[in-house]
Length: 115
Length: 111
Image (cartoon, rainbow over all chains, first blue to last red; front, side, top):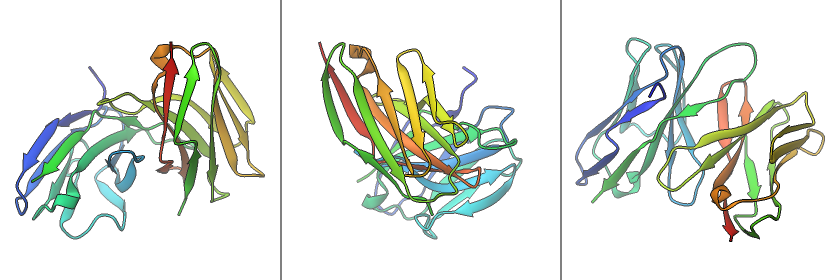
């Protein structure tokens, strides 16, 4: 499967713990996105990378959240001191850059449950 | 930023009938409008998209229309089948990189 890959698929953690998720985008895609999806809602934009540069962060991304894409390939999303309100599906997507807008391709997501 | 409104939130149709989902967006600079289908526990998958220089696009049983003046766009599914049951999301693309989603429509096709 050459699509967007996310690990782990599920993560259960206790409140206050730190968690880290990984995303491997489609290899030729230089844009990478993180979204959060809660039950009954559409995905909400968290952050965006063009190669290794993080170009935008949503106000949803508190200082407990940090994302990196050190070599412009895979990305990690870390949540420190998790809270119950962080429970959600975290989706990664990638796209190629070019003239005009191009489709985003999503991974299967990491479902986080904070107990 | 962009705000996308989607209606209805749920839609139940008889197999073979048509389904229509409508979305509005707020930022006139948005120029690309994809639609995603998400089955339970699975990733959102792109099913059709339309760019701002086009008014309508069709792909087999699926069509999308765009009215830039009114800032709304719609998804039309004809001859619905049970496998069309899923959650559908509209989205609007701003500044060529930022995709904002509607809240989704749960479509149920009754056999």
